[in-house]
Image 1: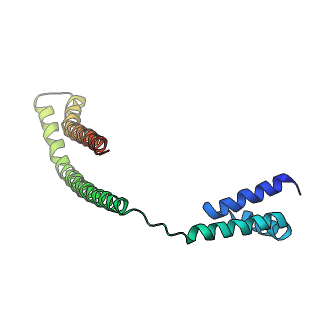
Image 2 (image 1 turned 135 degrees about the vertical axis):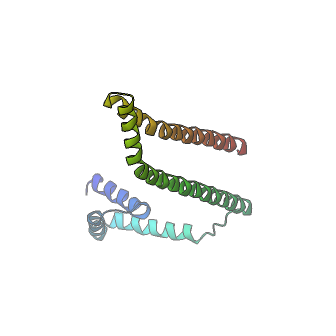
Length: 163
Protein backbone atom coordinates (compact mmCIF):
# COMPACT_ATOMS: atom_id res chain seq x y z
CA UNK A 1 0.00 0.00 0.00
CA UNK A 2 1.13 3.51 -0.57
CA UNK A 3 2.71 5.57 2.18
CA UNK A 4 0.07 8.30 1.72
CA UNK A 5 -2.74 5.94 2.72
CA UNK A 6 -0.92 4.90 5.89
CA UNK A 7 -0.18 8.54 6.69
CA UNK A 8 -3.85 9.42 6.18
CA UNK A 9 -4.91 6.56 8.46
CA UNK A 10 -2.43 7.66 11.14
CA UNK A 11 -3.67 11.26 10.93
CA UNK A 12 -7.31 10.16 11.15
CA UNK A 13 -6.54 7.88 14.11
CA UNK A 14 -5.06 10.81 16.04
CA UNK A 15 -7.82 13.20 14.97
CA UNK A 16 -10.56 10.75 15.91
CA UNK A 17 -9.24 10.66 19.49
CA UNK A 18 -8.79 14.43 19.84
CA UNK A 19 -11.21 16.46 17.74
CA UNK A 20 -13.35 13.89 15.98
CA UNK A 21 -13.69 13.09 12.30
CA UNK A 22 -16.56 13.17 9.84
CA UNK A 23 -18.72 10.13 9.21
CA UNK A 24 -17.16 9.49 5.81
CA UNK A 25 -13.64 9.67 7.28
CA UNK A 26 -14.65 7.34 10.12
CA UNK A 27 -16.05 4.84 7.59
CA UNK A 28 -12.90 5.03 5.46
CA UNK A 29 -10.69 4.54 8.51
CA UNK A 30 -12.75 1.60 9.73
CA UNK A 31 -12.59 -0.18 6.37
CA UNK A 32 -8.85 0.57 6.08
CA UNK A 33 -8.15 -0.85 9.54
CA UNK A 34 -9.98 -4.06 8.58
CA UNK A 35 -7.71 -4.59 5.58
CA UNK A 36 -4.36 -3.20 6.79
CA UNK A 37 -2.60 -5.15 9.54
CA UNK A 38 0.05 -2.45 10.11
CA UNK A 39 -2.50 0.32 10.68
CA UNK A 40 -4.69 -2.02 12.74
CA UNK A 41 -1.72 -2.73 15.01
CA UNK A 42 -1.05 1.02 15.35
CA UNK A 43 -4.69 1.61 16.29
CA UNK A 44 -4.55 -1.09 18.96
CA UNK A 45 -1.27 0.31 20.31
CA UNK A 46 -2.84 3.77 20.45
CA UNK A 47 -5.83 2.38 22.39
CA UNK A 48 -3.54 0.59 24.86
CA UNK A 49 -1.48 3.77 25.33
CA UNK A 50 -4.58 5.89 25.93
CA UNK A 51 -5.92 3.34 28.42
CA UNK A 52 -2.60 3.38 30.28
CA UNK A 53 -2.52 7.18 30.40
CA UNK A 54 -6.12 7.30 31.62
CA UNK A 55 -5.31 4.84 34.42
CA UNK A 56 -2.88 7.28 36.07
CA UNK A 57 -4.48 9.40 38.77
CA UNK A 58 -4.25 13.05 37.89
CA UNK A 59 -4.94 14.97 41.07
CA UNK A 60 -3.94 18.63 40.92
CA UNK A 61 -2.04 20.22 43.76
CA UNK A 62 -4.29 21.68 46.48
CA UNK A 63 -2.82 25.14 45.91
CA UNK A 64 -3.81 24.98 42.25
CA UNK A 65 -7.33 23.89 43.18
CA UNK A 66 -7.70 26.73 45.69
CA UNK A 67 -6.32 29.33 43.27
CA UNK A 68 -8.73 28.12 40.59
CA UNK A 69 -11.65 28.31 43.00
CA UNK A 70 -10.72 31.89 43.98
CA UNK A 71 -10.47 32.94 40.34
CA UNK A 72 -13.80 31.31 39.46
CA UNK A 73 -15.52 33.05 42.39
CA UNK A 74 -13.97 36.40 41.46
CA UNK A 75 -15.07 35.97 37.86
CA UNK A 76 -18.59 35.01 38.93
CA UNK A 77 -18.83 38.16 41.06
CA UNK A 78 -17.51 40.24 38.18
CA UNK A 79 -20.09 38.76 35.81
CA UNK A 80 -22.89 39.45 38.30
CA UNK A 81 -21.79 43.07 38.58
CA UNK A 82 -21.67 43.41 34.81
CA UNK A 83 -25.10 41.85 34.51
CA UNK A 84 -26.61 44.25 37.05
CA UNK A 85 -25.00 47.20 35.21
CA UNK A 86 -26.41 45.96 31.93
CA UNK A 87 -29.86 45.56 33.46
CA UNK A 88 -29.72 49.18 34.62
CA UNK A 89 -28.57 50.30 31.20
CA UNK A 90 -31.42 48.42 29.52
CA UNK A 91 -33.94 49.96 31.89
CA UNK A 92 -32.53 53.41 31.18
CA UNK A 93 -32.79 52.75 27.44
CA UNK A 94 -36.40 51.61 27.72
CA UNK A 95 -37.36 54.60 29.85
CA UNK A 96 -35.52 56.94 27.49
CA UNK A 97 -37.33 55.49 24.49
CA UNK A 98 -40.69 55.79 26.22
CA UNK A 99 -39.96 59.37 27.27
CA UNK A 100 -38.88 60.16 23.71
CA UNK A 101 -42.04 58.63 22.24
CA UNK A 102 -44.30 60.48 24.67
CA UNK A 103 -42.49 63.82 24.40
CA UNK A 104 -41.99 63.87 20.63
CA UNK A 105 -45.35 65.36 19.63
CA UNK A 106 -45.36 68.16 22.25
CA UNK A 107 -41.72 69.03 21.47
CA UNK A 108 -42.44 69.09 17.75
CA UNK A 109 -45.34 71.46 18.26
CA UNK A 110 -43.31 73.62 20.68
CA UNK A 111 -40.40 73.98 18.26
CA UNK A 112 -42.80 74.58 15.38
CA UNK A 113 -44.59 77.27 17.41
CA UNK A 114 -41.24 78.92 18.31
CA UNK A 115 -40.21 78.78 14.67
CA UNK A 116 -43.43 80.47 13.57
CA UNK A 117 -43.38 82.95 16.46
CA UNK A 118 -39.88 84.17 15.62
CA UNK A 119 -40.35 83.72 11.87
CA UNK A 120 -37.58 81.09 11.59
CA UNK A 121 -37.21 78.92 8.49
CA UNK A 122 -38.48 75.35 8.98
CA UNK A 123 -35.04 73.72 8.42
CA UNK A 124 -33.62 75.83 11.24
CA UNK A 125 -36.16 74.88 13.92
CA UNK A 126 -36.18 71.25 12.77
CA UNK A 127 -32.37 71.21 13.09
CA UNK A 128 -32.66 72.79 16.54
CA UNK A 129 -35.09 70.03 17.57
CA UNK A 130 -32.71 67.36 16.24
CA UNK A 131 -29.78 68.87 18.15
CA UNK A 132 -31.94 69.07 21.27
CA UNK A 133 -32.55 65.32 20.99
CA UNK A 134 -29.08 64.26 19.86
CA UNK A 135 -26.87 66.15 22.34
CA UNK A 136 -28.03 64.22 25.45
CA UNK A 137 -27.61 60.89 23.65
CA UNK A 138 -24.11 61.79 22.47
CA UNK A 139 -23.17 63.02 25.95
CA UNK A 140 -24.49 59.79 27.49
CA UNK A 141 -22.64 57.63 24.99
CA UNK A 142 -19.43 59.57 25.61
CA UNK A 143 -19.83 59.12 29.37
CA UNK A 144 -20.40 55.37 28.97
CA UNK A 145 -17.40 55.05 26.65
CA UNK A 146 -15.21 57.00 29.07
CA UNK A 147 -16.36 54.87 31.99
CA UNK A 148 -15.79 51.67 30.01
CA UNK A 149 -12.26 52.69 29.04
CA UNK A 150 -11.53 53.70 32.63
CA UNK A 151 -12.86 50.36 33.92
CA UNK A 152 -10.83 48.37 31.38
CA UNK A 153 -7.68 50.31 32.31
CA UNK A 154 -8.31 49.58 35.99
CA UNK A 155 -8.81 45.87 35.22
CA UNK A 156 -5.58 45.83 33.20
CA UNK A 157 -3.64 47.45 36.04
CA UNK A 158 -5.18 45.00 38.52
CA UNK A 159 -4.31 42.03 36.31
CA UNK A 160 -0.71 43.24 35.92
CA UNK A 161 -0.23 43.77 39.66
CA UNK A 162 -1.70 40.39 40.62
CA UNK A 163 0.79 38.45 38.49
